[in-house]
Image (cartoon, rainbow, N blue to C red):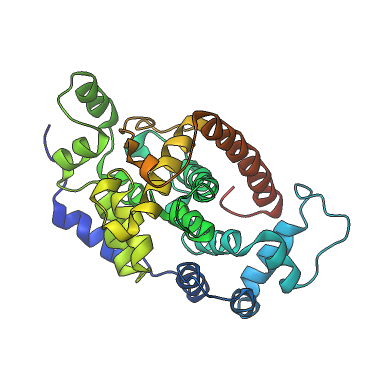
Length: 292
């Protein structure tokens, strides 16, 4: 395989990506804390008129079927939950990344957001089975962000998916990450990690992005979170993915060290992911959200 772009070109592309909106950045910072109060989330939303309008449209959509219209930020945040609010703020702030066509992965526009949302929901559900305390909110946020590096690498991987898949079939490469590194000198987990650093995201989110396909390499203190995202990502691919790299990564069975999950519970989680994804996706579509 021949390199089609220099690593430095890709690093410059990462540096050129705009910063997150203040609201999105603040909400992501909060999501990584164990002791934040929902009022802090409400206060951030109230200072952002566009985000306030977005949340009210979403919570009052037909998909949620509320009997009484929600007219206050307090009730909207309480109903949707802090994790969903942070995800919506992120999607709105970085829609150019999440909604773009992933030509390098043969994925249609919106596929990255759909996969990330499924992963977030799955990681949230998996966190409930943790053997030691693990924030479901943090797992959800990490899931939303975990594959953002694909939006960066896609532009440099155009027309290479058939070659990478052929190399996998011929056992020339270990997995899709290996192929990315051989072509570009960087894979999507590292690209996403560098973007997370540029965005000054909390360390837990940075590491979940960096190691979600290789969770055993994450620092020990962060492995429960990273394994939740790792397993959530694979479940999301099983639930539905239109990208060429779907299910082209290896499952690290080390997740059983951190989660009490039977095959039946994994199957049930997959059903819950599809149901929750459908509801939220319909709500976003009805609200006119660009990511839908």
